[in-house]
Each structure stands twice: as C-alpha cells, then as structure tokens.
Image (cartoon, rainbow, N blue to C red):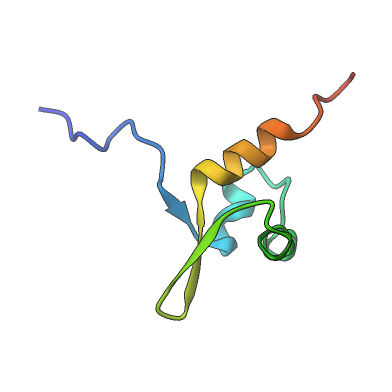
Length: 68
C-alpha cells in the first residue's frame, strides 16, 4: 500500500530550502525579505523559521508570466 503522504506537497519548508523548492529563483535572503514584508507566510517553531509552502506557491502564482 502506498504511503498517504507520498504524493503530497510539503506543508512547510525552511528558508534555506527555498532556493531548491523554487528552482533557484528565490534566495534565502529574498525569502526572509518576503516574510518581513508579509508577502509570504512563515511560523516560528522553536528557534527555526518555516515558510508555509502554500503561501510561497501563491506568491509565485501572483508574479507575471515570463515572456509576456
């Protein structure tokens, strides 16, 4: 039986992993800037900051399409 989380996207990601998650288009520094301006949603878990993946996806979707 397949794992139920096998095809699910991550719920939260580390700012250090944002570059990998976005294919290199958003750096760690830019991610923290987006958190500060409220453009993406993040939470603190202990001392760690985690970005809500859905808010990062929504931010990317709000950006203009390339080549237009």
